Image 1 (tube, rainbow, N blue to C red):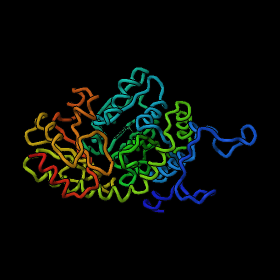
Image 2: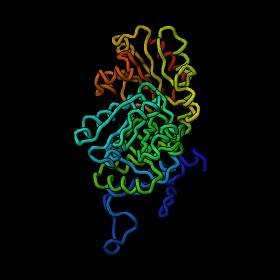
Image 3: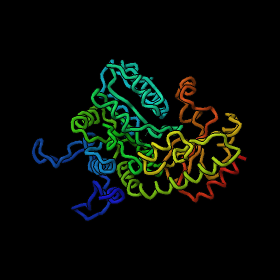
Image 4: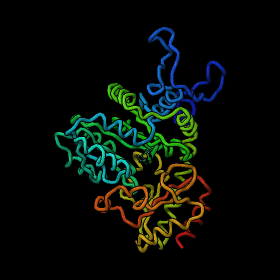
Length: 379
Ligand SMILES: *Cc1c(COP(=O)(O)O)cnc(C)c1O
């Protein structure tokens, strides 16, 4: 089955009891056992729930992986991955990460003896230079958030193989529709399903996908032992979201492409970050490893003033001033004071994150309305 078909059918079949074609929301914490230890595959809903199983199988199928595990949030999924490590282990990560990822690394796990280095991963040589004999994991986002930097995943997987380093790719921005990291050599794919997979800004969730049976066993153990699992209703909503992932993403990409070109040609804008633009330094790699450039666009106003950026994002009518991304509605935000407020100023500066940067999550509205809205707000 091809992607759009898998999106609608993988992990789901009509309910054998009633014929209902939608997976029921199994609001139950426990399951009857015939005799002690003899059951239909479910014992307790932290360990497993049929609505969650359907979603886990669906997401695994979309990423081309053998196994999926769902979590209460993207960061709960991140937490589970970090739980694979031991005190003293070293992680090399990209320097332009989701702010909360940077926060859990440095403010939670560093206290337990994990060590982190952050480098510009758009040049894989920087990763090679940071690897030590203690390095057990390389952590990538591509495209990155919010600068939309691109890393060649296949190139980085070559660095990892043979060194017993796990390659983790946060595929939240690209989605499996545009990019398939497991096929490019990643060991674990991570998602905040809150974003494009859910797609309607109505839930918080996370997921891990792997094809490695041993990793799956360890991660499933952590999922159950730590217990940060999503409820069945959130799983149902995410399943409903993935059914339309392909059609939504087509429109997100088309709209973001048009907006990025419009911004690029406008003299009121000094810089536009969008991997679909030929001028973007990662354009060539993005064209190779992604089927389209995604729905996220960042830019800086010509005067590069933080004050004017803050005012501009407060003036839009259709673009809603809010954190998060990946929903059908367009959002605008100022990363330094919102999503990336947890990243220390010196780290932001080193990564090239301007205090004047504006980030768009381009929705699937009529693109002419979106451009008119930005035009008015830029003023
Ligand atoms: C939102 C996000 C996360 C964290 O996910 P939550 O669901 O908010 O916990 C991780 N990575 C990226 C790229 C994100 O955008």
